[in-house]
Image (cartoon, rainbow, N blue to C red; front, side):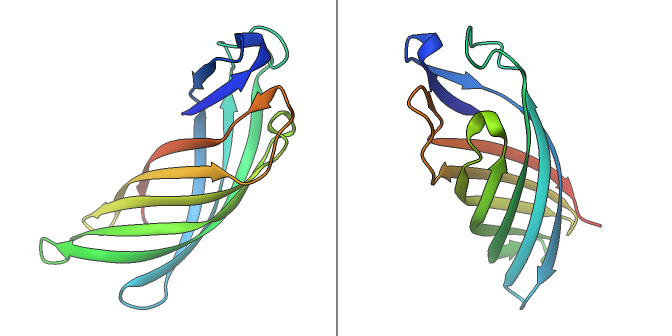
Length: 143
């Protein structure tokens, strides 16, 4: 979900939700540290905007992240980790901003992963379209 401020909404923040599908490759560097690289495709139908961005916004994201396992439980069948990294949204309507990403992940049975991430945009957008940050909730399966 992302709060977007646009002149067509009277400069009021509008919350958007986008469907996102992606893949991530993770390498364990040590028993506590990981490195991951990933990408995703997304689509937002922009039903809450009335003028300039009324068409669907589609794009891709690419990012790299470092993770640290905070603690494990259940005989190390589950763990909680903190992640952080850099990425970029490739979407012309969003001016392709770079972002700093941070989050928390819960892994159960060493395969099922639930994550919450916050992405703060690093680049400025045009005067009528502001997207300072976005959040995402991920559900994944490790092979």
